[in-house]
Image: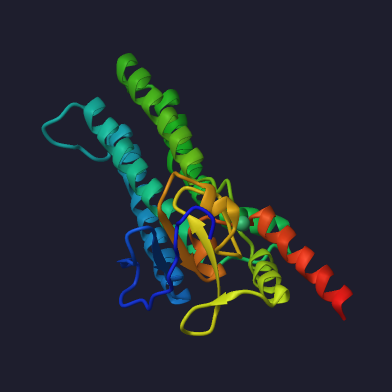
Length: 260
Ligand SMILES: [Zn+2]
């Protein structure tokens, strides 16, 4: 170890519990979520999306004069409904994206893969676009309400669409290839269940196969090193191996071949 940061392996007592190891360094065991939790997250996401569309329906009924809403002005109600609609859309999409990183879809069918990963963005269009059209085309709405509610709805559509988009989608094939890559090098660390583990720092985008990697030990940004299976790394958005680690493995393999 180069600069005195020491990593000591510990047994996890609880999920996501920080365990202090020694004065110099800290390692945190990160457990991958159970695949069944992905299903629960997806179900809750769909319920939230249905509630979002219900908000839109209430707003549309109100505009058409089929549903009177008490106390506040029509404009205030429309804005409230649009904001609540947006909250439901975004919360649903966050859960949906999280589920797709725990239990990734296959990318064999590219279109299906894209639609599945970005379902939240599609829901966002469904939850706002019809309302926007109705607001701007309805003749009974007064000019000011039309303008304000219309703009709020357009902004909500944009926020919802972008927030729901998965900019870093993961496929089941990609995850499997990463698992195989770790296994192939043969020189990996294991957790107490015997599963191969990788290491990463809190805000990094890459995971390390070797805990003594200079890229981890050089970094001053965090004293805490996270350790988990490749599934746990993927779940937390780390989908790329560190190049230094990969190079080191390749080099070791070449030396091994020559040695034989
Ligand atoms: Zn590395």
